[in-house]
Amino acid sequence: MRKESKKFLRDYLNANSPTGFETAGQKIWLEYMKQYIDEYEVDVYGSVVGVINPGQKYKVVIEAHADEIAWFVNYIDEKGYIYVIRNGGSDHQIAPSMRVHLHTPKGKVDGIFGWPAIHVRNKDREPAPSLANLTIDVGAANKKEVLAMGIDVGTVVTFDAEMMELNKKYVVARAIDNRGGGFMIAEVARLLKENKIKLPYTLYVVNAVQEEIGLRGAEMISRRLKPDVAIVTDVTHDTHSPMYDKKTQGDTKCGGGPAVTTGPAVQNNLLNMIIDVAKANKIDIQRQAASRSTGTDTDAFAYSDIGVASALISLPLKYMHTTVETVAYSDIEDCIQLMYHLLCQLEAGHDFRYFK
Image (cartoon, rainbow, N blue to C red; front, side):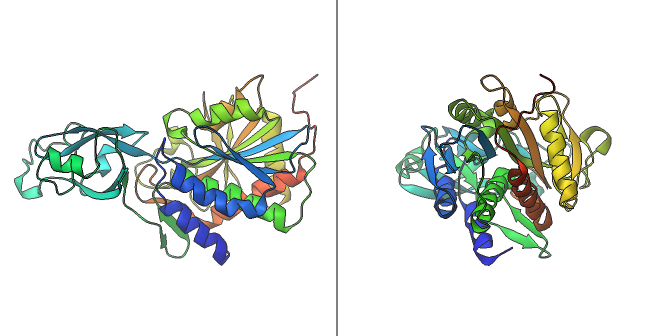
C-alpha cells in the first residue's frame, strides 16, 4: 500500500465518527476524496457523495457506511458515575476496563469503564457485564462535577483505541466496520483518476451515515440519487476465527479475498457480472448466502424507489464490533481491484433485467 494511502487509512480509522455524529470522519474522507472527484454534495444528515463525470443519464453508486458503534450517556448518579445505553450494536461484554472518549461541546473528556477487581467478585455468582451495571468513571466526585465537564444525558461516548498492525499483514482498529469500506471506495476513485478512466456514466462515491441503526443514511441517499446500479461494500465475519460455526455462519476468512453474497436483495445478473470480472482479473473471491436481508446498506438501495440493481462486496473481518477489528491488507487490495475493474467494464445503459 502506498504511503499516502496508508496515512489516510490510519487518520480515517482513528477518527471518532459514532452514529449520528459522523462529521469528524466525514471531513477526513472528503478532504482526501476532493483530489479524485469532479464535485461533491453533503446531505442534511451528513452522508457525503463524491461525483465523477456528473450529468450523465445512467447513474452508478459505490457505497460504504461511515458510522461506528458507540454509547450514549443515559443517567448520572449523585456520586458522579455514568450509566449508558447503546448507540448501534455496542458490545457490553467488552466494555469493562476500556478507555473511552466522551464528546462534549467543550471537547473530548477522557473516561474509563470501571469494573470491580477479581478478588472481590463472588466466583459462584459473578455478575456479567450489562447495561445495568456498566459505569463510566471520569474522575468526578459527584454529579455536579460531571455536568461541569460538559457531560450530560445524550453525550456520545466512543472507545479509545487506535490503528495498529499485526505481522505487517493485518490492520487492527475499531470501526473498520465500516470505515474500511470508506477507504476502499476512496481508493477506487483514486485509481479511476490516476489511470485516466473516462466512465460512460455518472459515478457517485457514497459514504453514508447511520447504517448501524437501520440503514438510515442509505435510505435517504438512495431516494435522492435514484441510481441504476449500486455496489455496496461492508464487512463480513471471518468464520475461521475461534467460536464460529461454519455450518450456520458460512465459510469466509481473512486473506481469502472479497466475499460476494447471494440473496434476495442482490440482483443475480449483477452478481454474475462481478463473479466474471473476478475470474477475468484473477481475483479470488469467497461466497456467502443471505436467507432474507443482507443486513447492510445493500437492502436500502435494492428496495429503493422502483428498485435498484444492487450487489454486496464484503471485506472479511475478525472480531466485529470490538476495538480490535482485524482485516488483511491483501483483502483490502482485492476488494479495491474488484470494484475498479467492475466499474471499468460496466457500460452505460446496461439492463440487468432477467427478461423483457
